[in-house]
Image 1: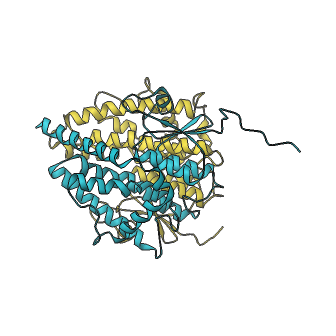
Image 2: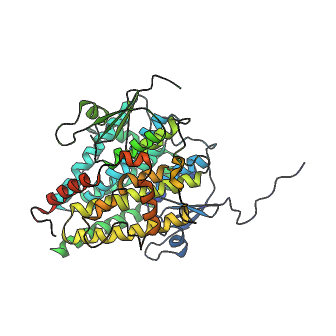
Image 3: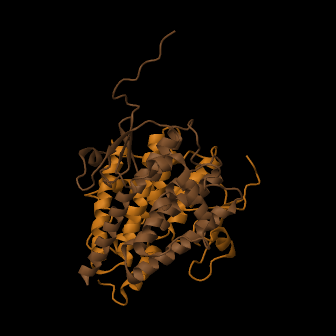
Length: 240
Length: 240
């Protein structure tokens, strides 16, 4: 009987992830890979000095994350997650449901996070005055919708059901960044009265192993986001 | 195959998103009922019920269950009606699927949405959008050549309807009207034959596909609609 071939170095099966220490988009890819038990090599970028590898593999957007598999690149975090799901389809857990209608709903909510929820919260974080108010009120509306969606199914632990799925991964930044933003901005974004389900979800998410074990260092995150806020506000002041 | 399938598409004559779905349904030979929505003067109760979050078209209602967002609808159609017509997405090759999703997202956010800014913005913001649109069209040219048509588009390629698939639909449902759209971008053609010959021939040949020709609105009606949007944006003077 032939023995199994030992994998060689630089085996083209090798999976690499180009990321940064703090990108919430890159973190999505980390969670998906780790949930599925896919070994990979991290390539950490300094976005102030983008590497040739990044520029070569994501010439269009020049952003992280970029997944490299068989030497080929996959860009955009939600595209990466679907790629991981479809390529390693035998690895549990399922990140998307199998039923086409449920898949469509799932994709809708994942897209909602990126198209609506994130831009609004970024506006609330990066602006002041009326623009910030608008960002905050849109965020409130989005959270209301997400709260309602989460409440739809009884005994639903996550948006993905009993285990985390693509929507939970997409929304994962809420786990730590929302309290951080609340602290920096001095506003309440999630509260017990309006978001009981989301708060419970957030607690559960923060207890999920891959989330717990891969969160960027808190003090570095605080420093980074505080600096971003100061730059945004400073820019506005300079423009007046 | 069930004879009791009920498919209703809520659309609007000028919505490229609704057109994408119509083209897909027709290509796959799926019978459907079409409901034209008057988005300004009175959305139908059915639309509000089926898309309470965004209240927009298109909404595909399949046996009473709604699916929203045009690209998500196209994936749903492909997954649900597997044996109707031809596959709109690559089937086995997950890398190709990822590429297609990436470029569909690019067409949406870096081309279609940028074009909308050229219509709705004024002054510097508009000039910036025009520059970005041109740059992004050149990125699409490169992406198209590298990933999909390295030898160019064979003559009569789209005479075989089976070659009209997800990315083709995503592009031509909007940019099939590039000549009408170009009337509002002053000094430049949106899809320039010299600078982006592959994109040009891609869109021009897709426009001739019978199903596409049937579905796209007439040039003059689109010009009138865009003129209306432009005038709203700039007030009484169209020359900004």
